[in-house]
Length: 191
Image (cartoon, rainbow, N blue to C red):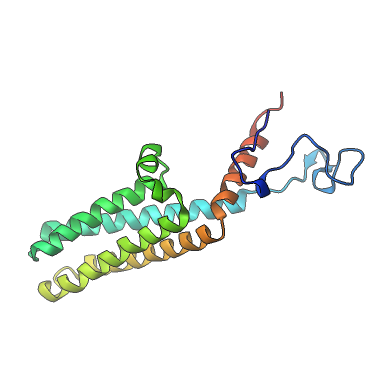
């Protein structure tokens, strides 16, 4: 039995009832042509969501590695070293939340909301950029390639955070969950 009780009311669909205004139980969307159902495909939409997830994971990983390298090679003040440790640990939280590791999501329930998730990603990026401003003055551009990589990955993580904020404000998480449910139900064999 298919259930959609966990979805908001606007996203729930009565799968067993025929569409309104159709006496035979068929609608234009489910009419078969050449044996193939013309149901909507969510492949492109899901790929878009997965692209944002992958981009976020990659930018957080690059940011963590760049900060780890600069942490090891830096002769900066203790403040910068401590902030780099924070950035590395927060990048690990970003990666695990994007991988949907349930224990992390349960412990950090604020990341369940995509708007808050976007704000936290933006915070990690801005924290990194504020560290770099102080370190560049003390280092004098010794590791310019790593600093540039760190800068652009922080900007990219900030952009991913903005995307999550926008998707959170427009309730795209429910749309993604509905797409995943529909995909799962369409791939399951009928009893």
